[in-house]
Amino acid sequence: MTGRCQGASRMPGVSSSAARPSIRPSARAGFIPEGTRDVLPPEWSQREALRARLRTCFSAWGYRGVEVPALEFASADHPQDALAFKLIDSGGEVLSLRSEFTTAVGRLVRSRFPQGPFPLRLQYGGRLWLRAMTSELGRLREFNQMGVELIGVQTAQSDAELLHLAAAALETAGVQAQLEVGYPGFVDAVLEDAGLSGEARAAVHDAIDRKSGPDVDLLAAQHGLSDTVRGTLHAVTDLYGGPEVLDAAQALAPGLRAQEAVAHMRRVAALYGGPLLFDLGVSRRYGYYTGLTFRAYSAGLNQPVLGGGRYDLHGGLPGAGFAVGLERLMQALAPVLPPEPEVVLALDLASARAARAQGLHAELAWTDDAAQLRAFSAARGIRRWVSDSPSGPSFTDLNSAQVTP
Amino acid sequence: MTPAPVRSPDHLTLALPKGRILEDAIALLSQAGLPLSMPEKSRALRHEFPGVTILELRNQDVPTYVDLGVADAGIVGKDVLTESGRTVYEPVDLRFAACRLSLIREVGATGEITRVGTKYPRAARAYLHSRCITAETVKLSGNIELACLTGLADAVVDLVQTGGTLSANNLQEIEVLFHSTARLIVNRAALKVRAARLRPLIENLRALTAP
Image (tube, rainbow over all chains, first blue to last red; front, side, top):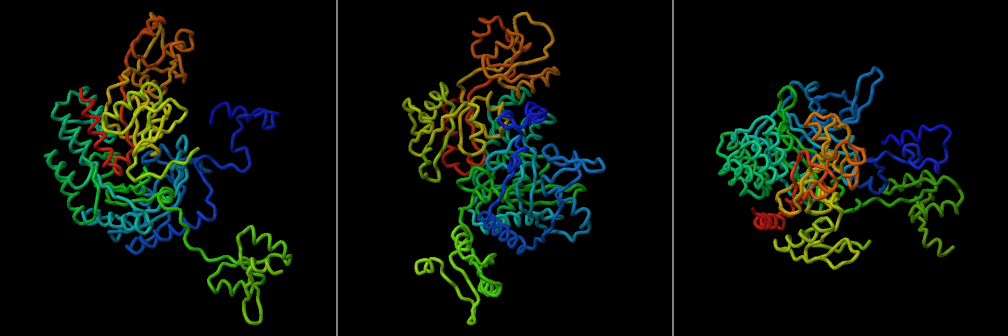
């Protein structure tokens, strides 16, 4: 919102829109805030069908559903605090709109399941809000996620379970995707072994996460890193691809932490068994993720459709999980509508009930005016009427009825 | 708009800035093995080659197209990339279109800096912050030097290529914020999904531009 916009709308006595070229959209009827959207019937059905399939998939793996409030107490410790929408409560307390599920589910686990039993498997779904400056293609400010958390255990088996479940969820959704595994702690171990700390380490993390060889060179010069270290850092930016990456990583980083990270990835990959991509140069949010991270790429969509990883809840309880973005997933899906029952127009309650019993959807006639009903049926795409008769529901095909009046 | 033709799964879409950098970029990408040639002078903004589509864009738009995945990769100056704030992969320094982003003042100016004119407000603010200078930035679009000479600003942050414009206008470079050259940038998902095409391209470009 620019100052000019606000000033214009406060100008007294100016009401015609012609005189207010920079009128605020909120002042105009029918507008919704940027980055939000309406979902209309055909897409709504598709989304609900997708949601139902994912929920069923998660449930079948033992993940029980929970709901958490969309209103939260704002906290500077929250990972998305800077991007969350803020509201002022009646008592003056600052609330934020839910901007991420893992933190909210973590809070729920600490207060509602302090004793587990662990491992605790939970699933969630709902809306999130992020206050970005502008919304963009596939980056709404109000969006939907569904996901799972596997809490209280920290084993290669539990990491592999999440990969299996992610693959199952994508298959259920009908999305062709490739899973990629990373380990931000590997990058951190390499940087630690290279003697980097503080701001320098953070800067190199950032350069490696952007696979920026040029920035690695610049930072190496600024911080006086040896050519050997510089070469290692360059090699880390190239550690992506198939399983051969793990061999390269093992040969590249002899330090104990790095070797353990690679060994853990090997165990998880073996337990998973299926095809995996690897990227050991991923170091985004390296201070947050404590182990494996993963995401899924769908061919033809240059944005990940799923993402997750291992973290520690406040209080040290280990957790891991992933979320799928519903809007992204819808983009990756062919726009095929689930088969829907035919909609008929019922002229009375009894025939409507009978039609529904046959698995049809029945809308009720609201008037006796046949011309109105016919016009509505044409506009709504209804092809048959149903009415009650002594022998049961009787269907009239509108097309043939019009041909023979 | 003509609809995009049906493409094979490993088709590459590249975002390139129009103007002089386009010629250098196409020459370099051809050397790296892509079947490209300089498009005929026309109003077309999308150029089709076997297995590759070139999008001809304003340079500020290249990071946007690549970050949002409309283009798989692109070529853009580090100055524009830094200013965009986009997190894309930037694996190769292509070592052409060299310039530097500098703080510039009128020759002899010694007063406090309170207002800075620039095309690069993000970089300018970061620089001022790092130097503990409290000054406002004014976003301008061109001929930035005039801001200094007319009193709109006490200093400007702008690109310097040879320094010729500066001396002709009685201006001097106070400090270099950073040096910039053209970079290959790659969408984060595209690098993985189209690795079979993008990895060899990266390798070839590295080999061609090695110092």
